[in-house]
Structures are given as C-alpha cells and as structure tokens.
Length: 540
Ligand SMILES: Cc1cc2nc3c(=O)[nH]c(=O)nc-3n(C[C@H](O)[C@H](O)[C@H](O)COP(=O)(O)OP(=O)(O)OC[C@H]3O[C@@H](n4cnc5c(N)ncnc54)[C@H](O)[C@@H]3O)c2cc1C
Image 1 (cartoon, rainbow, N blue to C red):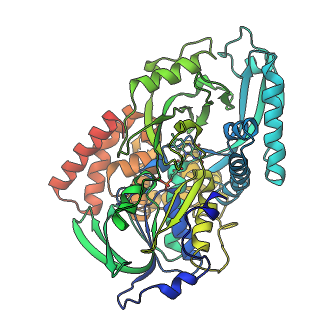
Image 2: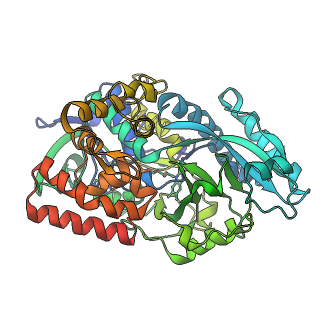
Image 3: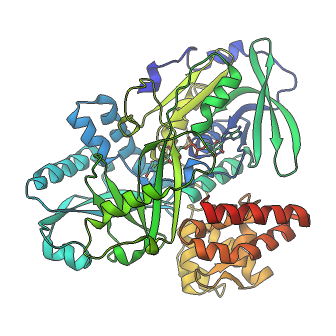
C-alpha cells in the first residue's frame, strides 16, 4: 500500500499520544476537516473506536466530489487493463482492494448499493478475446468477493435488450457485473451513523486556521456559515480530509511544503432511461484518448460519464460544452439513434483529488491510490483513493491513532438495519411509487417519513412528477442536516442530479418550507433562493 511507505514521519500505533502537548481545554480527541466520503468515513470509524470526534464541513456533506461520481463501487476495469499492460503492482492492488471493498459496501449499505450488469458491445472479432478474458480475470481476482459471472451475449439478444444499439457490424456483447451506489445518500448515511455513535457533525462549518502551541497544532478556528459565528475548539488529533482542497489546508499547517495534488475534472450527463431500456448498463471500452465510458441505470434515468481533464481547484466546477460534445460523440458511435443535447435532463461536474508525486503523467494515467501524510506539527492528511475504498482508507488512518480494532467491516449504516418493502409503507397510506422511491433513498428510515406524513403534515407532494413528499423535506431538515434548498433538492432527494427543470420548479416551495422550519429571516431566505437558482441554472 502506497501510504504505508510514503511520507509517514511518525510511528504508528499510539506513539503519537506520548508527544501530544497537553491542553486543559481539549474538547475532542479527533477533529476531521471535510465531510465528503473520506472525512465522513473517518468520523464513523474513529467514533466506533471510542474517540470523541468532531466532523466539520464548510458546505453541505458530499457537496464536493462525493456527490459527483459515476456512482460505481468497483475495482476498476480500466485500472486492471493498466495493471496488466504495464505490470503495474499499484494498479493491481488498487483493483483488488476495490473488489473487496465493493462487497462490503453492498453488504453494509444494502438500500443504497446493489450489483448491476454491464454490457460491452463489440464490433470486431479481434476485440472479443481481449475484453472477454480481461473480464474473466476481473471475476477471478474478485475471488470470494465476486458478485456475478461474466459471459458472452449473442448479437440477437443484445439487440433485443437494447433495440437502439448500433447493429451494423455488431458481433456480440460481453456481460459483466459491478456495483452501483447512491453516492450523495451514502455520504449522509455515513454522517448519520457517525452521529448516532456519538460524533458531533456540523455542515456549513468552515475550518479557518490552526491554533498552535509552540510548533504543535492544539486547536482550530472555525466559522459557522449559517449563524455567521466564529468558534475555537481544542483537540488531540487533526485530520485533513478536504479532497481537492487538501493542499490549502496542509499549507496552513506548514507553508513550506509542496503540493501533492493534481485535480482532474469529470462530467456526467443524465438522459432518459429509454437509451438503456433493459436496465443493463453499457460499458464503452475505448475512447479516442484510451478511456472507458459508462451508461448506467440511475434513479430511473440513464447516467453517462465521464471525462478526465486536468483542472484548477474550484468550488462548484462547471460543465463545459466541449466535454458534453465529447461524451455525445463517443456514445453516439454505439447507437442507431442520436442522443443530442436536447435529450440532456441534467449535467454535473466533479473534481478527482488525484495524488501526483511524479508531475509527469497525464491525469488519466495517475493511479487512483491514496496517500497519508503526517506532518511534525500534528496534521494528518489523507487524500486520493476513490469512493469505493473510503472504508479501508478510514481504517488505515484511524489505525494510526489507536490499536483498538476497526469496527466498520461489517457495520450496517443508518437506513440499512431492516429490509423493508413498499408493502410496509402501505399501512401508512403511501402509494407504491412514492414508497418505492422513499425506500430506495432512505431505507428503513422511510418509515419515519411515512409517519411524519400520516401524523403531522399529510401527503402533499412537492413534485407530482417524481412523488416527492413535503414530509420528506421535513424529515431531511430535522434528521439529515438540510440547511439550504439544494441540500435537499440535489443531495437528499437527488432530484437535482436527474432533472434540472423540475428542480427549478420546486425550488420556491422548498425554500419557503425551509425558511419556516428553520426560522430564517426573509432576507436570508431570499439570498438562499438567489444562490440556489444561480447554481441550478449554471450547474451546481
Ligand atoms: C467525475 C468523477 C467520477 C468518479 N467516479 C467514481 C466512481 O464511480 N467510483 C468511485 O469509487 N469513485 C469515483 N470517483 C472518486 C470519488 O468521488 C472521490 O475519490 C471521493 O468522492 C473523494 O472524497 P473526499 O471526501 O476525499 O473529497 P470531497 O468529497 O471533495 O470532500 C472534501 C470536502 O472537504 C470540504 N472542505 C474543503 N475545505 C474545507 C474547509 N476549510 N473546512 C471544512 N471543510 C472543507 C469540501 O467542501 C468537501 O466537501 C469519481 C470522482 C469524480 C470527480
């Protein structure tokens, strides 16, 4: 593991405690900065191992990269190809770790993650053995963590499954299995689980600076962006899990250190599910720059992605036209009908926190592995990796603070304790379509939403088209840290990730309910509306 031999300056297992400066004011054992997949995973792991944890996120949880992924829990078919082609051990270990963690995500967040089948249509007989054997190898490497067996699908069957696929020259397709998950909701389930185990979790709380005692960090200054309030807190351990922003935070701890990140941007577009009517995803094996593309079933739509271009660090990165054209050009090579810009329901862009210690590779070629760095002043930074491996990354970091055993391997996240079906919600007079939607997003917490509807607010929809209940909004305000309209529209109800027009349509209603529930002033509420409409229109 790369992180085991890079930049670790202080020994593992508890030594650190011996050197910690004592402060009477210590309120926490661990402060985690950054509430994406990495920070939220660490907060949960550390809390479960007995630490008193504070997790702070400057925006909403998962508002950075962690709600903008391709939503695959995977070993990475492309990384496997790289591993074999270049005898690259790092890539191979990454694939293996991903496959092991894939199974754990599927088990531990069963309402949010599930296996999917992916078809790779092939138009040359030469490609067949290469791709098929590659996918068989993917199965073999999965070992006991395998979730399905790759197979060949005859041309007739492929056309039956997907009538608009390009037929001219089609030889057959190869089918394989991978995992798909709901990234934004998984992030919330992690935060809720951490809180349930005793962590203090705060979104819209920005880390501003470190407090030093001699050369050691003993506390942080932070700013509550909703209440506009500054606060100082003191702790023993400080973990920087701020993704593409990590270099900024590292430099506040030590201004002389070099950058370790080279972010790359990736966009996704969402279209109607009619382009993948069978529910199987498509894996397009080769683009002109040697990448793979995916068309995946996602919340009753089709998600297409992604691109890979070096990028500056920015908040709310924008989707550009060239990237959309790139995706459409490559996807349309595989269809007899043309998918056009008019078909796009929504698009979004994210930044990969790629680690670059070489500075000479193209970003698409950088290994997606993580590194952990411990600075003498007491700041630990963890960066890189992927969503799929958030749990093992967290395990590794927390194991540097304690030798207590990790408890997350079989830990069921909030929402996945009890399997419920839409029948369980019919007792609460919720129709089947609404029930299905609620269970998919909230798991067993769907019951709480149903109860809220039945006993308190009724069955009024915010969106008739998608059966989004007003009760769902109230539930997320009360239990899922919703403070701004897009927290709900994009990251809790996921409407913003699939339908921009409908999101704009419900914005005013959501904003009004939010202001009422959280007692926002008219001025603040108006500013939230303006901010949200701008982001929805330009891309959040
Ligand atoms: C296009 C794309 C596709 C991807 N597809 C996949 C995939 O299919 N499968 C997969 O496994 N992985 C995928 N990934 C990778 C995965 O999304 C990322 O590795 C992961 O989300 C990174 O999480 P993170 O917590 O490290 O970063 P982030 O999610 O960015 O979280 C960092 C957080 O720190 C916060 N922060 C920054 N500064 C401060 C501060 N001063 N105070 C408080 N908080 C602060 C930010 O607001 C942010 O929310 C993809 C990534 C991209 C961009």
